[in-house]
Amino acid sequence: MDDAKKPVDGRIKTGIYCKTTYLAQEQQLPLPIGVSDYRLASTEYYYIDKTMMIKEFIDERPLVTLFTRPRRFGKTLNMDMLRTFFEKTDEDTSIYFENKKIWSCGQKYRDYQGKYPVIFLTFKDVKFDTWEETFESVRDILAKETQCHEELLTSEKCDKYDRQKYEDLASGNVNEVRLSAALQDLSDMLHRHYGVAPIIIIDEYDTPIQQGYMKGYYEHIIRFMRNLFSGGFKDNKHLSFGFLTGMCVEKECIYDGMNNAYINFVLDSKYSTYFGFSSDEVKEMEIYYGMTDKYEEICRWYGGYRFGKSEIFNPWSVINYFSNGCESRVFCESLGSSNVIRKVVGEADKEIYESLISLVKGESLVTYIDIGVIYSHIKNDVSTIHGFLLAAGYLKVLKTMVGGNGNLLCEMDLPNREISIVYQKEIIIEETDEIVERDGI
Figure 1: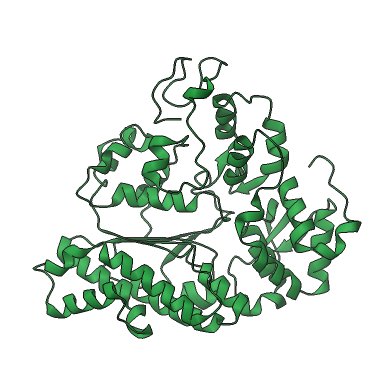
Figure 2 (figure 1 turned 135 degrees about the horizontal axis):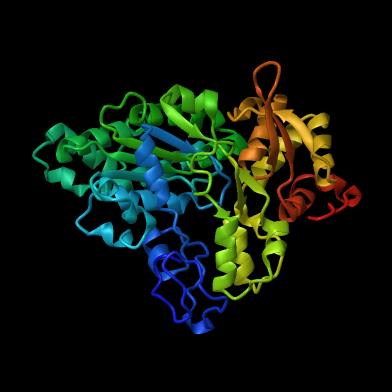
């Protein structure tokens, strides 16, 4: 824990302990269950330093980056970390990074801190039954973000037409066409006001798309999101950088509305340790909370994920495991993705269904992978279904190879016991009585 005061047991700044003793209960920092605010998490809770993600991004500098990771793997917290680091505000936000790893990397990286206006949106709670409700929710989200930039109302760089656009967006007085241009209009005004193009961050952009697929307004939400992204990310000269998290809705949304995106999939080695916990981070947490005999159990229940070449643990489940007195049980049922997965699997053919049953029985499968999800065609595409389950955290890759057709061929398995139980209880319920627990899980 990098940001905590040095405790009496000799724990050093990096979080590695010099002794095997642990902190008394009253000195321990609380676990950040449900905390996605970086400032709060990094100062008042047990925080695992992920700030080297900032260095890796600055070194590479892709214009637009999409991170595809399972839900509850720290995406929102990381996006808020990026916002806190880059955003130009009246507050001196460098204090939240001075004792973090990124600050020790030198002046080159410190010079990026607090230099950009930022547009930050999260769609993680846009889960409605109709397009009308979804549109109203997205309109309110954009209105609230617009209100955060009230300096544009009095900016000498903005004319009366800009101010009218601002007032319409801030009040929610816009139709679908005008709302789809919101990112383009807002980034244009911010660029002129500050003389620096803004950073646009959209967290869980795919949540309303999944909901549209579930509730029957898929084509409507796809068309709107394509136009919104086209204005915000595609050939937008008023953009410094863009960050998004969510599933890769490739051919119908991302590539049409944002063809300049670098897609960081779970198979990629870049950024592989920044979402979820590494084995070293789990062991340090064990030591901090005085539970040094739990590692193997945590591996069986909540480990087994592989991002790039890194072995990763589910952070949500690990944190809840420690918070519940190290009682091993299923915590990821609340991830909110089992409904869409159940629908996807339920619409698949018998061969796909039987392959998932074989996984729960302890077998692996070899299949082609397509990382781009097209929900309207997913039931007819084996490679897309498996790619969707992989990105959602319901499969892990054991080995990759290139098939004869040039496509990616993967040997896959279930990551851990928790996911095996979720399959049995939530996804392939009809076969529960026939499924046996896997040895060693």
